[in-house]
Amino acid sequence: MSTTTRKRINPYLKTNNDTGFGTSATSYGGRFINRDGSYNLRKEGLPFFQRFSIFHTMLNMPTWKFVVVIILFFLTINFLYTCVYWMIGVEGFTGLIATTRWEQFKEMFFFSTETFTTVGYGRVNPVGDGINFVAALEAMNGFLSFAVATGLIYGRFAKPKSHIAFSDCALIAPYQDKMALMFRIVSYKDNHNLSDAEIKVNVAMQVLENEKSTYKFYELPLERSRVDTLMMNWTVVHPIDNNSPLLGLAPEDYQTSDVEVYVQVKGFDDVYSTTVIQRTSYIYSEIKFNAKFIPMFHESDDGKTTIVELNKLSSYKQL
Figure 1 (cartoon, helix red, strand yellow):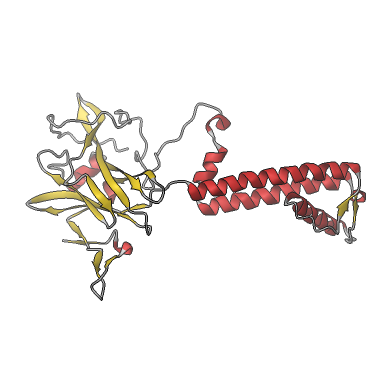
Figure 2 (cartoon, helix red, strand yellow):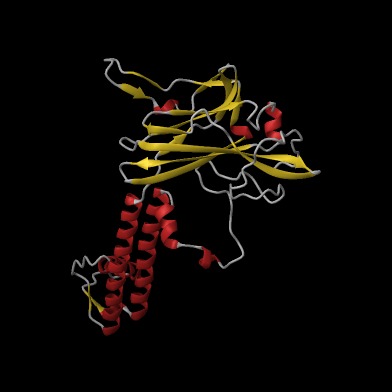
């Protein structure tokens, strides 16, 4: 965080002390909330496995990582079982047609995959007691692993998600007879339109208080803080007037005050039949001045439908 602090502050503005963040300016590194809505923090002080949840990590990781982990687990556990079979000895199998050591190892590996998945093609069979015991353990390990994987896949598909996208930047733009802070949001999935959507916007900034640098948090008054249905894009507007902590800030003040605008949206998703929440934030480098958003919806050619152009969510022009 910046060590240069803003010295101008309206003492009559009410601060928000319920954000959950501390006020010490020396205790934070980077932003409070990442653009994807996750909190920008790392927990330490307890053993890793006491803090780490494998199940919830697998539920929340990106899809490509989830697929990679599943494939790596499958290959690794079968390689380990193959090593056990190899140590017991090839004489515990019938049906092996390989003649070299490497080819025999490959046949054992594919026997392991067939046992793990309970496919069992049948050409290679265990005949020794040791091999049969390990194969029985592997078969049990296999169907238990697939049960866990099935639960994870179902959990990932069924988990309620807030399919809400935010504009890449916020704007300081003319609004009526004053200036305003603006950004846009949209529900981008078909059929996932939110009902009773509510938004709360706070700003964090460094100030000098009693010759000490500290953070102050303010809830920003909005032109509109809720909509009945979030079916199109929503331009969220905070008028910069006498009730705004941003009043009188020049562009360079946003950096020296370490301004961060953080946002929370929640609403009822009819598809999931539950309330979903999404967060994001904008730091000073993501706030553009003297700009205006480009309209992102228009009437269809036949005049019967409204077209929302999602690719224009972050499009703006300088004034």
